Amino acid sequence: MTAVLRWLAALRGSQQIPWQDEDKIESLEALLEENTETCQSARSREGSGKWWTLTLLNCMFFGGSVILYIATWAKHSERNACLKATSTYSPVLEEVHMPLANTLLNGTLWLGDDPLIWRGLPNSDEANEAWNSFERVKPIALTRGQIVAMGKDPATVAKFNDEYWGLGDDAYVGALDFFHQVHCLNVLRKETFRYWNKAGETVPEWNEIHWIHIQHCLGMIMEHLLCNADTGFLTYNWMEHELHPFPDMSVRKQCRDWHQLADYRDAHGVNLTKYVEWIKPDGVTELQQHPDWWKHRGEHDKGHYANGTEIET
Picture 1 (cartoon, rainbow, N blue to C red):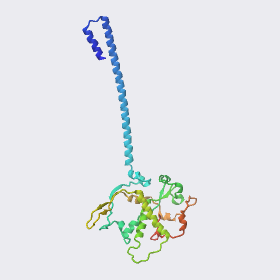
Picture 2 (cartoon, rainbow, N blue to C red; picture 1 turned 180 degrees about the vertical axis):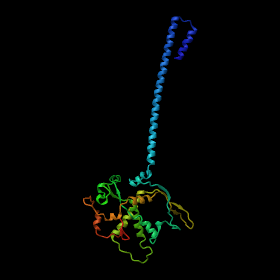
Picture 3 (cartoon, rainbow, N blue to C red; picture 1 turned 120 degrees about the vertical axis):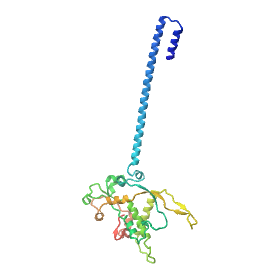
Picture 4 (spheres, rainbow, N blue to C red; picture 1 turned 30 degrees about the horizontal axis):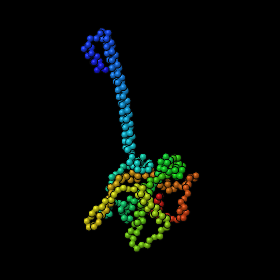
């Protein structure tokens, strides 16, 4: 448009134009200028509309990114987020902070000057006390919602009757499996050391349930090893006076603080004396015994006894 106006102005300056034609040209110039302003205004409005649209879209994308970031941060910063990602539901992970500890396991074959207490011989009162502290598989009251979250059917889980326990109408019997696992390992430990320093003694005759208990403990520990499917590696070292590489069994792990489970058990566990005296209430749902139970009905299971006190498994 501007080029046209300039051309008309040049034309007027180079030629004599009648006044009537000059009026027409001026009218045309005015029309062209008006059209130019209209087009510029339209482009300005169009550009402004696009700017607001782009701004709005950018704000929406930015806001969405912020929300996603906050959601991700909240998910990974919540209590025990890493453990929850690799564990089934447990109220412990909801109620207790259970940190991970980068730990180098002591895998050396030799005892050294300060051996781990777990390696103590059966004549060590300190070692026996440490191992037996895990034998308290203390029952803990769970809610119906917690039972469901664990994938169990509340209709088949034993319930603490309120008239005996005073725990209300939403209390089901549970226990931390960690202590059952250590109990099984302790059974195998005791069995392994049964004839330590007793050369020449006659092997006692155990009933069949004793060996079933040993098989149970072996199977439980193996199942947990398979379940955890540890991906760590051993390394090997050249050692003096050794012709072949010797394994370095001290492997670094991300270890859970098991002390938190002991504290949780003691804080939430029900009274054991009262639990031992508790008998089956009327009207409860009963599950059928395993067929093998009938084969050994009435037999005395020595494998479940330690120091005259029955251990719940």
